[in-house]
Image 1 (cartoon, helix red, strand yellow):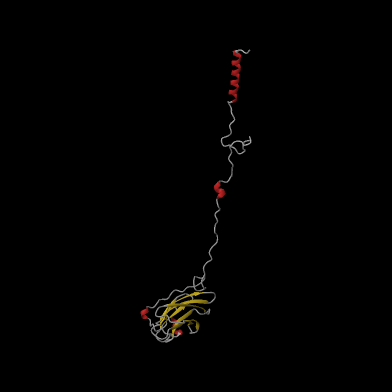
Image 2: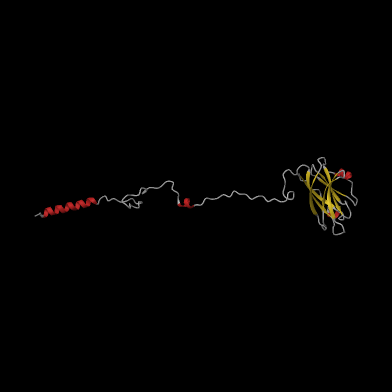
Length: 223
């Protein structure tokens, strides 16, 4: 029969063995969710390099609109500025009180040179269309010898206000100075005329009386 001392010794050895088994327990890493089938995840405790973030995965690329609106264009010769044109310096406008409004007075002329020897003229007239039966029915461009180079027909009355009408016409290469005249149905070519130097762009106004001045005489006033 075992003695009391032997029983105590056996009991002590058993307790020591249990204590030794609990000193180094195996714990899974903190960021490892732990094995499901007894094997740890190969990504446990590591950070992937180059992995897209949530915002990179879901961000929509910014689209750059490179389209441009087509330029709006009007009728050629009516709007805008064309390259290579020559614009005249406006002439001095005669005060309205000094003009005989019964005549078709040319008060301003502007021009642009187009392709070749073609020119566009913008001519401003004033005439008292309300005060008599006839009205200002055209303006025309002549050379200094009196030859007509072009005409702009006017189809209706314009009251007593200034108005501007335009026309494009060819001018011979050897013509440097032109005369711009207005015409009315009652008095013909009286009133103020404007001479235009096509090379310098300068203009000069000449007041006529009831009778038109011959172009040869007007030529001496060409600027």
